[in-house]
Structure formats: structure tokens, C-alpha cells
Amino acid sequence: MSALRIRIPLVGTGFAILLLAAGSSIPAPAAAALTPSWITEGGQYGAMYGRSVSSAGDVNGDGYADLIVGAYLYENSGYRQGRAYVYYGSAAGLPTTPSWIAEATADDQGFGYSVAGIGDVNGDGYSDVAIGRALGSSQQDGHVWVYLGSAGGLGATPAWEESGVLGFGEIVVGAGDVNGDGYADLLVARSQESGGGIWIYQGSPGGLSHTAALTLGTKFKSIASAGDVNGDGYDDLIVGLGGLCTSCGAAEIFLGSAAGLSPTYAWSVKELNVGGHADNGYGVSVAGAGDVNGDGFDDFLVGASRYDSNNLTDTGRVFLYYGSAGVPDVYPEWVFDGNLTSAQIGTAVAAAGDVNGDGYADILVGASWFDYGTATQGRAYLFYGSAATPSPTPDWTVAGDQALADFAVVLGSAGDVNGDGGADIYVSADQYHHTQMYEGRAFIYTSSLVGVPHGPVVSGLALAPPSPNPSRGPTNLSYSLPARGRARLTVHDVMGRTVAVLVDAFEEAGPHAARWEGDRVPSGVYVARLEFAGHVETRRIAVTR
Image (cartoon, rainbow, N blue to C red; front, top):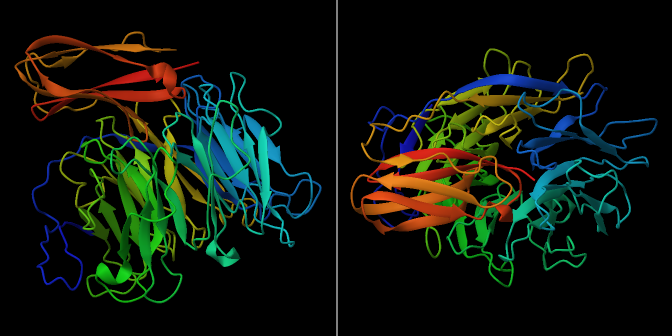
């Protein structure tokens, strides 16, 4: 494998391409051991367990992240009804027995084809989840259900549901807060195969509105929240158009604002502008990455799974773009590709969260067609963020153990399911065979932290333990500086996204204090991060309800 630290002008501008080849000097990232700690299966022929997986956030307010898994072809005394499972986190991690189950009551629903943790849509401090369906034959068969979190966990009945055209609900995504009102918003979409379409429903003290704040007829291959790429306080949306037609692959970003999400894109890169051959699949996968380089702007990923590199066919390539004030640069800061024909690196891309607890967001890449001893086992790669760029080579990787199981088609951050301060990772294989054919399987790889490396110790620089911790409201943060200089104190969620900037100014040497209003965020694990003179100190904060 190889990766490049690059600044590539668009093809046709005439500028040179600058490459930093594998083996060049890049600071080593902090280490964290990742071990498979949890495996669950569909337990039924053809259930397709793991077709959709997402962090559920913290639905019961205990400070541990929870996980939701869909099995859209599960049958319970019926035909293709579908089911969704939620597993509540704890100090011991996730249980193998579901903590909560919901299923369709009628045949041919495909309930659980899409699942998502969508944040806190009503501002009660508990994370909520959305579930969509995929099957049915009439033109009004689309449907989405939302279940609200509480101290007792998710409710037994949906608090919000909405019907739509055929395919409505094939995709559900937590949109973040696109209008900056403090309530999480929901994105519902249908795939381009069903005709395309995007609907945004905004949160409020009463929950989600039943009237879409924005409807777009956009056709797309992939879609995700981009986080806040321009630092204006509003979350943004990224859409990928890879594979829709020959030479029309692209990625586009729609910016949030006080009025909500813009109906027109503010940033776009076409597949013909990134090199390689036509129909390279640019935009087949997209994801918000969190703040990979710690500059206060969220970054984003685009996959091109059919990209040819190193004189090999369909190796695939992944592009990382950094956020910035205004509109992000169209030039990628880093790319990763392969040296194996038809591996299709970039089939999936995702934010990993902050796996090693260093205050930088990490990233995941999936290659579902990677061959490793057995044909098309699939492989997942993890790269740590840093003040520079991700490493040229993966910091961790795992391969599937069964051919054609779709391992790493779906992957992402599970949040911190065991409260150790590092984000954990999920990977699924929805066509996995064990006791049943195509039952599907999901895996959790937990981060085991034994202290976060900070580099050389700086005498007089310290970030004291937060107080109170765990916290049900505001949290006090004390720190000291060894000399006068610019200090930056921020708070991040375990996805690596900046949730608060407490200090960003020149300060005198000596002790200082700041206060974080943690009562305004959903429960879960957060990281306080102090930067001074190139050095970083971090502290974990648990927010409970």
C-alpha cells in the first residue's frame, strides 16, 4: 500500500504534481491497541444482519455509546419483515444479547434496511435513532421511524414517523445541526436506483417537524453529514455521485446556515479533475471525517473504488480534504491507494472518531474486494489523525475471514462503548455464513488505551482533571502555561468533531480556568484538548443524564 501527501491542482491547470512517497519522514502517530471484542450474528437464513450499522449515540444517558444494527430481511412468523437491534454500552462494552429490539408487524417491509443514530432531536440530553425500510411495491411505500432516547433507553413505540414515495427511507442519516438551533436534524433519502431525493427534517423542543425544511431531487450514490467544514457553526452535507454514469462521478458539499441547508452546492470536484481514467468511481463513498489535523475545521473523505494506480486496475483510491474558513480547498491533502488489482479501496470511507485519544480524529477505509488468502475477503484500514497528515501506511488493518461476505462494505465509529476514552470501531459482513447462510455478522474492535502519548513533557504545561467528572452539567477545566503564548482549549466528541472552542488566544504564563457548558450536549464521552507551542494535553470527560 502507498499514500501520498499532496497538493494537486485540478487536471488541466498545468501545475506540477508534488508527491511525498511512502517512506518519507512523517511523525509517528500515538498507538492504541485494537482488539475484536464483540461479534454478533443474524441467527437466521438470509437475515442480512449488518446491512446497516451505526453508532446510536448514548440513548440512555449512562455515558457509554450504544450501537444499532439492522437485519432488514429477518422474518418473525412472516415474510421479510425486518428487524433492528440496539446494544447498550457499559464498562464491560456491548452485550451480545440485544438491549432493545424493534421489528415490522407486516410482511415485505424491509424494516432496518437503514439505521442511524441521529443525535438529540428534541434537546432532552438523550440520543435518538432513526430506522428506514426498503421493500414494498406501491408508489407510497417509503417509511421512516424515529425512536427517542430516555433514562430507560429507547421507547417501545416510535415518537415520529413519516411516509413518502417509493424508496423514501432507504437511507437515514444524522444530519447534525444544519441550522445551528441546538437541535439535531434528520436526513432521509432514497437511492438513485429509486429515482433519488433528499429530505431534511429539523429538530426542535417538540422533536422533528413533519414538514421537510428542504427537499432536493438530487440523484447520488453516497451521502453523509460532513460536519462543519467551514467553521461557521452549522453542519454541512456531502453527496457523492460516483458510478451514476460514465465520467459523471463527483462529490458535492451543501453548506448549513441559520436558514438551514442550502439547496445548491458550494463545493464540487468532478472525477475528471482527480486524474485516473474515466468512470473511476469518484464519489462512490463519502464521509465526514471529523477534525483530522486539529485546526478546528471538520474534514471529509471521498472514495473512488475503481481508480487505477501503480499500473494496476481497480485498486481504488481515497481522498482526504481539509476543511477551512469559507469554502474548502478543492485539492486533497492526502490520498491512499493500493497495490492489488481489483481491491477497490474506497468502497467505504468513514470517520473512526478519536481512537487513540490524542485529540485528533482518525479515519477508516474499506476495501470490500480485497483478496487476502481467500478470494474477496475484504479489508478495513485505520489511519490516525495528527497535526501533519495521516501516515502513508495504515496504523491498523483487519481482513475478513470468509470469501464474498461483504466484509468492510459497512464500517464506522461506534463511539466509546466501554468508556475507556477512545472511540471503538464497527465493521460488518451482511452476507456472512456461520450456522445459517447469509445471516450476516457484525464486529466491534475496541480501543485499549494505556495513556495517551503527548510527546516530550513540557515543564509547566498541564491540563488538570475536569471537575466534576462525570458531569451532568457545566464542567470546570483548569490548566497552566509555562510561558506567554497562544493557547487553544477545545472539547471534542469521540467522533473527533469539535463541539466547543473555550480558549483561542494569547495568554500569560501561569494558571488559567475555563468552563464548558456540557449540559447542552447529548450524554456520552468527550475529550478536552489543550494545545500550546506544538504540544497537546488531553482529558476525558463523561457526560451523563
